[in-house]
Length: 230
Length: 230
DNA sequence: CTAGTTGACGAACGACGTTCGTCGCGTACG
DNA sequence: CGTACGCGACGAACGTCGTTCGTCAACTAG
Image (cartoon, rainbow over all chains, first blue to last red; front, side, top):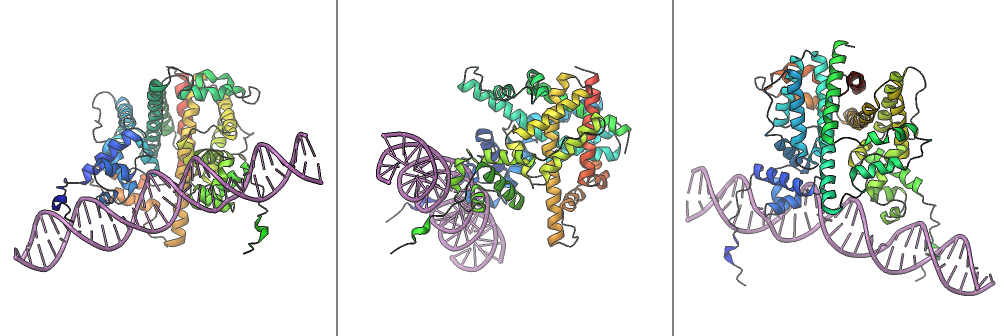
């Protein structure tokens, strides 16, 4: 039977950038875990096997998407070193949290993409400018990277929860913070006196406020520790 | 044909504890990701469906295993509040890192098991004893939990890499830190001057040493930030 | 015009999480 | 003592996953 001889697809120029960009979009829509090779391929109107021409495996693809998400982070130019450092880190976290739980990729594999390294370079430069010991700088960057991933994930969870709450439940007590608070409320005050006492505070404040505070704590700690080496 | 009428298995009393303990063992052997329901079931000489009697899904099982791993962490009794806090956190990290990358479970879901809450309670108690503001305590615990998960994962990665290096490669340059250092070495010094300058330091020191330093930084920061609220 | 290389992709493999329905067993009740 | 019941074990299956292989179309070099 004569199947259309023009099954030739006139298939569009696939490329690594296109694949990685598609992956980023898919993560935005369905989250990191559900962003499968098949879904990314479908978004590109092709099959999963086609992706492997440009990418070794899923980890590499997600690592590339993670790095791409940081492409537009701008390095601050105003203020003293500390203000610039904190702003840079905050921007990095925001850039990641803007793409769902993409920061999960930073936990599965240590991020070493070019954009991430560019930000690392700048952070190290600012730390040195602030008079932090070289040795302390080297270890501090670890702490900052750790903070970035964790804060981005927390913020993403908060965003997602808020979105779902708005969509399905009308200010019910079953939202993200609400569920957490419910666990604390159900605890035996005799066994967990401190948690019970601080219950109201444990879930207080918005994600941004808490993250900013945590970052200040870390920088304060770096300054204190750097001055008393050993 | 007369199949043995004694196909009755005399199947052993399965239980939630047995299932969770088996999961912990499997994670030890093959890691978090590869610890599938099927493998846990096989370890118990049964099928995967049997597990769902005691556990809602894989997340719950892994959360339970995570909590079980912390059952034997002892609360320190000697020293001032700071020494006790740092020792408690270090012990928690060690308990998790002893079970491969089990700490991944703490990232997939906020840990709320009884043992974990017990440790949280004690950490909060110590922070308050140290004179940290109540509000700061509430946010500090977040930071500590974040640190615990990250440090445990890092230590697990380090342990695993060391094990594999010992096993397969005889002090080749291809081990964990070696690969990291290789990336830094391959960078353009003009584009990444600070990373290049600090290259030797970035991968220096053992995991324990670095983790202890990071924890000290956090506690220092808490003290500094707590005294200047807002 | 042909030979060779490259990329797209259908099909398949093995493993995954989870659900369903069945079936055997132990117990409690008549 | 018999019987009905409920619960736990689990074989089988569904849909999805990451990844590999082989094939075939299309472009490039000679």
